[in-house]
Length: 597
Ligand code: ADP
Ligand code: MG
Image 1 (cartoon, rainbow, N blue to C red):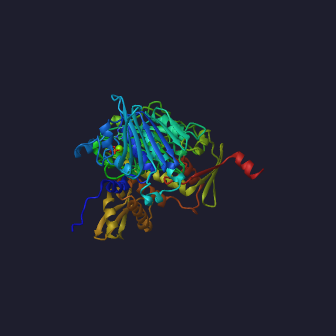
Image 2 (spheres, helix red, strand yellow):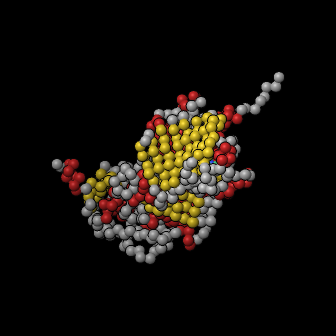
Image 3 (tube, rainbow, N blue to C red):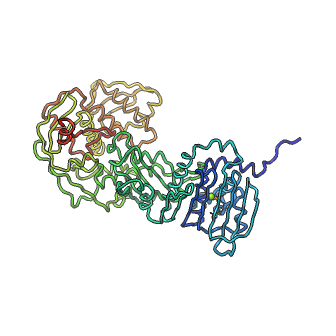
């Protein structure tokens, strides 16, 4: 007897449903995407019991004809693509033609739908893939679909659902992801007869405000700056949170061609742009919208379609990094330095014993780094630093809440060193306690960065080269990074299959210490093995960390004054490049209230 037979459709659909519909939120995603594909501009979502008992989506889109609605629930039934090559020019959210077939295999579905040109609409009832009832009805143009008792016939799946609270949170997240990319579509969300959100058509900014601004007293979006870049490869728009607004409670959204996506690699680009501006563990918020030619991305790699592959991901990374940097710089919150210099106030060179000049805030709202040159493939990290005017001539004082206090004039007294660790100095805004090691680390970091960009290699040559033994994997990384290492003064050459000879080191590195420093750098290069574009920065960071004056080093008055004056000339001086606090300010009131009350 032959034993192979085809699975009945309803069983096959049930199995396929496991891929597409994991929980109520995935069902909502599919239904809402269908409504959007049907060009609806009003979408209502009605949910009962976190979607377990009911998930209903009502749209005012184009609707379906009587035959189309029957077809829609068949597997691989789609109106959106007809040949494989269509996959590369997708402009719709759905395209697989399996969502409705999956949903009706694992739930009881009721749908009424009407097209504008039809007098009467169609109502269908489907139960476990079987049509129970079909009739002509009077109903508005559009589609109204109810998905009831999700997983009623798949008890295992039902058991895997989390608490209502968690499932509803998933629904909300899914809802946000969709609502945030379709600001021109009005949405309503109702849960257990309670109106949760009502979103009017508007701009992206208004949509963000409407969703996340509800609980905050002040404007939510006021904490953001706008970003934008137009290149041949990608156009990027959106909003990024100001550094001081970064927290553990952040919102991070990427969208591409109107579709939410997860993209850990691009996420790194954003974080990199904030380098040196965030306190440890604080995370920036962002809403970033990419537009690319559909044939340069592949949305087909993940069943739930949130991971998207870009053909030019390294270039996009560079452009994104530069765009975010540029925006942060424009608002004078980062070391971006390449804007139009007109109208800029010249800063006198700081003198530690004189009055500190009032800070200036330079910004050029129309600045676009891509306007002047289309040469996006050169490292943008470089272009952002390569300013004819030395960035150290500017002081940027708006970068953190704490920094605002520096807006007053500061006068300096002779600093004193405390426990060979802190530099204390009185100023008009309070007593400044400066971490000597971190301050020097920040100074050196910027110095190394500048050195790299100016291609000014300074290296002390060793009389007797040191041999550095490495395992094969490390050999490869170092081999790859020879140029980057050389740019800060490490002169290495391959000595054997398993070793390099160290012929020269940066001036601040003690020869006895060279291998330790290189080893530390190597660890960070390995961690970022796939992110070659951040290697130079990593090297500058590590080198600064390991060559900065240590705790326990006694400093002379001149040395302390030198550190203070150089520190305050940096574009960011409140935090080290890796986000550690450099300065603590004890204000007069604080001293009075906390210490002498
Ligand atoms: P896909 O969206 O991948 O095409 P679905 O199973 O989600 O597959 O939907 C199948 C088809 O049913 C769609 O291609 C579309 O023609 C039609 N359809 C589904 N939902 C709607 C809707 N809300 N309004 C109009 N047509 C719809
Ligand atoms: Mg669909």
